[in-house]
Amino acid sequence: MDVNGAQHDVRRVYRGGFAGPLVSAVVWAAAAAAYQWGSVSASMAVLFFGGILIFPLSSLVLKAMGGPAFLPKGHPSAALATQSALTVPLGLLVAIALGTVAPSLFLPAALIIVGAHYLTFISLYGMPLYGVLAGVLAAVGAGAIFAIPALRAASGWLGAALLLAFAIPLFLSHRAETRRDASSPVADVSAPVVR
Image (cartoon, rainbow, N blue to C red; front, side, top):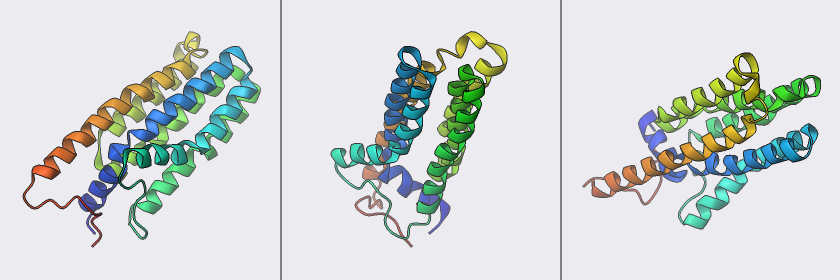
């Protein structure tokens, strides 16, 4: 299978990946609420354990839409998808450690980690939009840590808003590609391309 074919499969099966940022936005909003009205420890728990549930919950969203929710067994991109997903909980351990020393830095550091994890999606999906998402999340996190400390308390809400905002063009991109595939005389979008 060539890279373009593998990326097309990933975009098709995961619907441009929109469900991940959509579910992530909910998790981030819950973590921001826990931070604002609960405690930093509660926010850490929500983001860590909620983050672990993002892929399974995103799969449920895709299943509810009908069609496949997982790449077929043996697909060359499946390992990269799994490896990318595992970077977030491992990276969050660093943000949690930082947050125990300086609580206001937890959510901004988590934004940088989540943003960095989206960099692999550029290759996984073949979509430069993930580079923009990665850059914006990392920039907000870094800005809150190094330049605008007033953003620290709001960084969880900003992360939720940004993830939700990016879910929309990701979904629209998928719909546009689906229409192009359907109108292509040689397109067969009924099954994953495995060569």
